[in-house]
Image 1 (cartoon, rainbow, N blue to C red):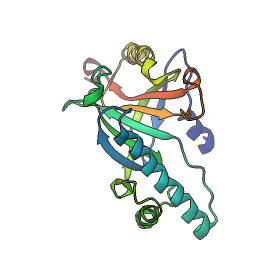
Image 2: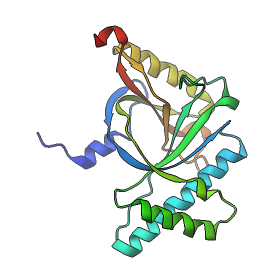
Image 3: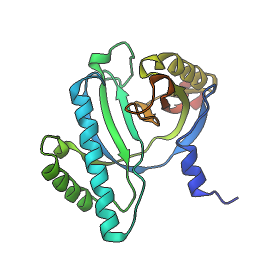
Length: 207
């Protein structure tokens, strides 16, 4: 059976609210910027602005050079805490994060470097020089949709972990969030966030 690539891609950016679903996430290029601390700190908000500044510059450069007019993808973030890579929702000040925006394959390293230089001239106040082009591959993952304020994600995340264990898996990588709602425009109770965790069979089931 032939798989529609557009439909397959769409499946990566949606999930029901009442249960988790399994997805296979391919190796994809992302603009990214790393940091640590609370998402409510100024550094986190500045990193978002820097990332979007470069992302929209890439969009403009590609449209000018190739007539390609791609849609800038949603903001994503990897979250972890401590050396073991686990994510503790109660240790907000100690969180480490990587903000990401997925890029088209035509966004080469040379183009990204040009976009960073262009964005720096336009927005010298932003730390765009910290933005990097990296590939990220999660593979088998499970995800669920959280609707509501970010601070109320714990219940949904607990449900995701329960379903991962019920399915015979364990989480093994950074906690992943995809922000489908814009907090600048949507009411907190209307925000939509995809919660994703890469999974692998439980140790006892791998033998």
